[in-house]
Length: 118
Image 1 (cartoon, rainbow, N blue to C red):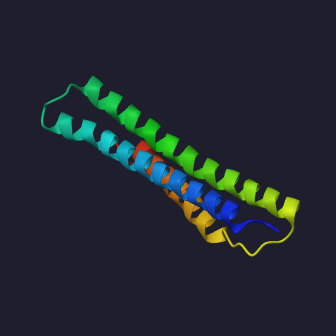
Image 2: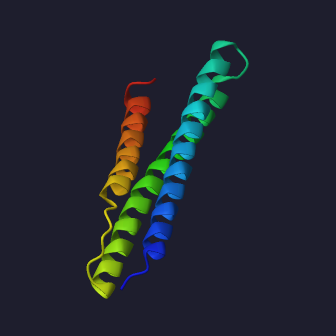
């Protein structure tokens, strides 16, 4: 019999990674756009603008990796627990789908900023 606290702790960990990924994506977006704003006001040369854009895109990519990686790792861990201890009454599909959607939307934001944003 599986202790439900183990599965709930795994889900809390997944949600913590989701918050981390969201923070990274949000910070990356702000950083990417800050370079454009500083350039528009003449506060930074074009080199600084491209540097902040590159750093912002890197943070967004890191957030995408965190979200997708957390989803995959959580799904594998739950599958391992189910295989080890037998069926349990646990439905993590919502949390995994939410975190995976966060990663996919972050990837879409990255694509928009790379190909359309400039």
